[in-house]
Length: 421
Image (cartoon, rainbow, N blue to C red; front, side):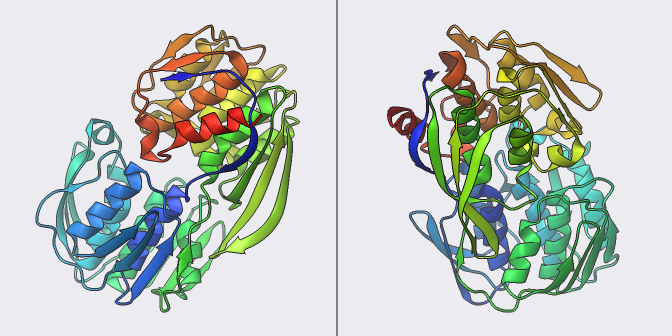
């Protein structure tokens, strides 16, 4: 696949939010009602969650990017729950099985098998589940519990997936759960629980789930901010760009990229602010602007953890050095994303220094000259390459289907935005 240079323009629509889509499907499966959900993310990760739920007896009827979920009483799966490349599917469905007293064998692709599962397994063991991992990773066997034990948890580090696994164990086990130590990781699960009338209170330090969802209103998933991020950065760094990205979720636990770019001097406006099924949504207008290097600390980095590769692209075009700290977990994503950033920016002549818990990027004038990028199948590396190519020159990537994990149709949407400039 070849990404070409060129400004972005026109109006862009991105898929439904992947993080919300996982959680909406799973929580809807706890209902005995039919639950309609619109604008679900159409990518492979959400498909993995859908198939995992079906193996537990959930009926999910699709119509385009919309679905109706019929859950209720779950059953043990007849075979392995194949989580494919999706860490969200893995950790969240482990929580479901723990709470619903199910027996299940979990596995995934070679990439997922390399990612740590012991942190979530340890917390769910405290809940009462019996879990055996393979040296702390997948494959794993989960045996749920009919009698939950610990219901008060302390997170050793902020993790939206582990937090969600524990909340799901409480929902499907029909017991209260208290979680401390979150420190502001993404809160889509809490918002969904509140939207569907669970009794829940939460802040950056304490979450108390006292009852499961009671009323399952139709849900319309907001546009994926992580998908919008590639268009935001490309339009910022590519001269002559002026683009509008519509219907984007701007949950404050997810918008660290906007804070970082605005600190760097980006020209970004938010319009048509509104609420959609419990989530804040806006249209984002971006115009090209010269950036300056800044220091980005752990608080912003936590709220931009999935956007760090494309934030690094923005830093490559900035004047001066940009330091990003608090991103140690990037080593354990779909690929080693720190190494991916070094490779990607190095192909454009930009120097990246690795720090004990972050990276330092010496900005300048990136030039790619038709370089080839190994994505290691990571969708965010592939799309970050598109943003880099827009301002720096032609780039080749090795896996043009990697983006299907979260954004099928990305290549066509990207070409339309460049054609509209």
